[in-house]
Amino acid sequence: MVQSQLLMIDGETGEFKYEDVVAVEGISKSKILERAKKWITVYYKTNDSILMDSTKVHKLSSYEFKWKLIKKDIPIELFFDVTIRSKDNRYKYDFSNFKIGKKIQGNVDAMDLKTYIDRFPHEYQIYIEEPIDTEITNAISSLEYFILNEKLKVEEDDW
Image 1 (tube, one colour):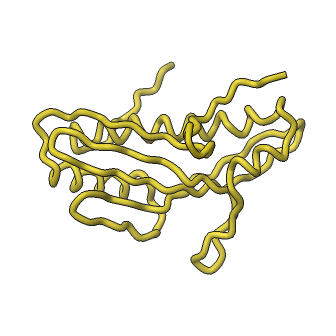
Image 2 (cartoon, rainbow, N blue to C red; image 1 turned 45 degrees about the vertical axis):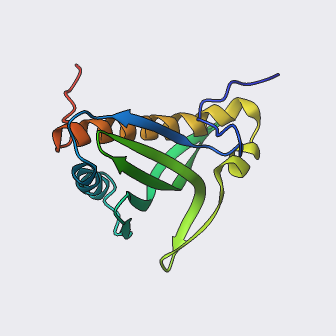
């Protein structure tokens, strides 16, 4: 039985990776970098340092969630790299190096996400993948809105 994979996978390395180039007409390279740094600071509120140079912004980010294995909730702390590179009128985002673990005295003690997921039967893997894919997809959408509008998108209640 082959299960469809929900998370994006790099064709060369086999690792989970979300990346794309986004066109943003009329926005300079420096303005994109400035907005990317603001976004990464506001969206990922952890105190981890942000590395920035003339072409990119980079941060080790984290996301906590729970997934259900049969009847047990399993708490997860996901760590991953977010890199945003810029050129005039476009930027490239890269969410990669996904790991699951804990931060101990400022250092991440973690295992590769693919290794972690592969430890569970196929029918339960989707429950790990869904919240991760949803979070990264939301982050990508938020980043795109922020680069264009220089503010976070306010979600409306859909009731």
